[in-house]
Length: 408
Image 1: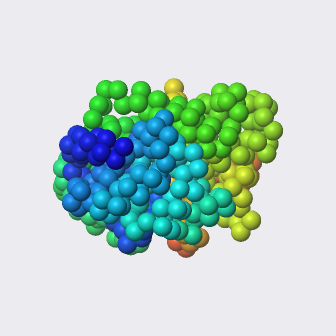
Image 2: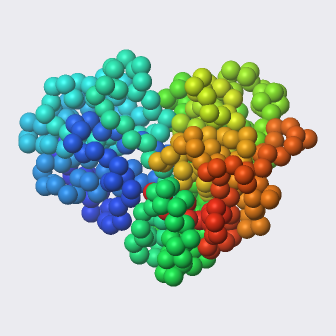
Image 3: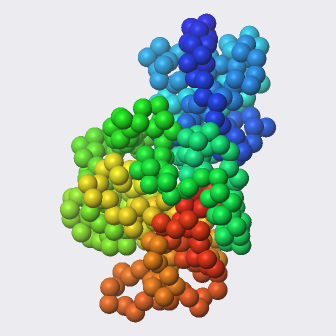
């Protein structure tokens, strides 16, 4: 079996010639012995594994996908042991969530073999409280799709400076101006919002949305059902929730109406929302609270990224798309919560209102669950900012939306 896997691995390495390295390489501590790379389908986990392995001697590395050995009846541990006996040092296992009881075998590999293991799988995987207690051994990283910065670097074959939130808040005018001297960011921003989140856009742009839809269907119909033991008869209810989000704004969702329309109880609805968030289908923003629970009502609920909105929604709401983008870019390195004043509270310190180019402090205020409530103004609140779409360079505490795409 090892020989067959090596032959297949060699062929895969030849096919995979992607040179661009995503932000994963800056985040992962490769000194760990057991590393998990989790994320939604299509964000580049397999490419990352192969790029990492290609830095070492072929004979000391091995890659295979767990679904390629499921039908063979061979255990992960047996493959790892034989690989180690023949001098192997770094093993990469893809699609690990498809292998039953993978936690137990990874634990054995970690405890008894002197090799490094990297594994990738669905973002829905959780190692907390599992029967193998693997969370004490494995270091897990959850990754996003392409940032606007990465999209531009791949498309234009140019390198751009990585920014921090502090960089943007203190120096956004100069930073926007510097970038705008090299490119016209607004020229590419709409393309990114509709097509730029998953790297395979550059492989087959004409069939991109079809591939996105197929990937999400696979997550719902296969990954989530297997990982969380969801009744297969409830698949259509998960899909129904996705469609309903296309018809509602994030702050207008009514949980009672949702339970009625989908035909499930409140507790089950909260669980399904949590599963879809873990699976990279939905994204939620919670109110800042020490009592937040995974299975509770989110303050705002979105499809995971703007590309999903443009794929599944007939009439995408640009206001929702802007907020999705902002949440996507901030959630990687910062903590983001719902704010009753403005739209979002970031790092428990900064308040942001997100809108179009005409959005100003005069118009910025609270998004209401009660439409008749008085709007809360942010203009006199310290550390408050307006984030505006369709502007190239900002002014004062008004910052271009696109610039937040350079945070990772």
